[in-house]
Length: 219
Image (tube, rainbow, N blue to C red; front, side, top):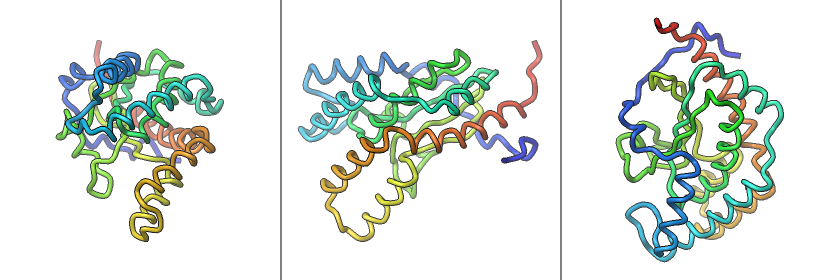
């Protein structure tokens, strides 16, 4: 376990950014509204991206209905006793985001101290470029923030087991992009959010320690 006294806040995010965010229900409604118009989020309005967004809404509805939350993680979420924001970088066409966001939303609902907000990647390139993965703009990224918008840490874009396979396949080319995408979503279906929640439990421990190590603000 990390010693909270050794933890440091590395950066801040502008409070103005939160004026352009969505809560989870508004984000879901945004995607539904765009799909009714034959659109999705972002600049790429290709038929394939719109198809991805349609499938993603089904994935999110599924996990909203049947997704189970790890009891240990639920209890740790309740240990957050100071305001904390979970800022999620996402897009409607992102399959990984669709597999993860319902679990994040369920967790955030457990504790009123936690404020889950979402931003669209392509509308916030400066923010995205603060959280690159191997130089790429991979999403989703979940950023933990203190009340003063100090960055506590981040998670993403995928649970480590499937991210490792993704990177290995990128080098080997054993599966085509389409084949790996199908394989990956089968992996998510079998995993049922377990890997994400295990990883998020560990990172939430660090965020809570950082939050508790911050100076108490005067009245």
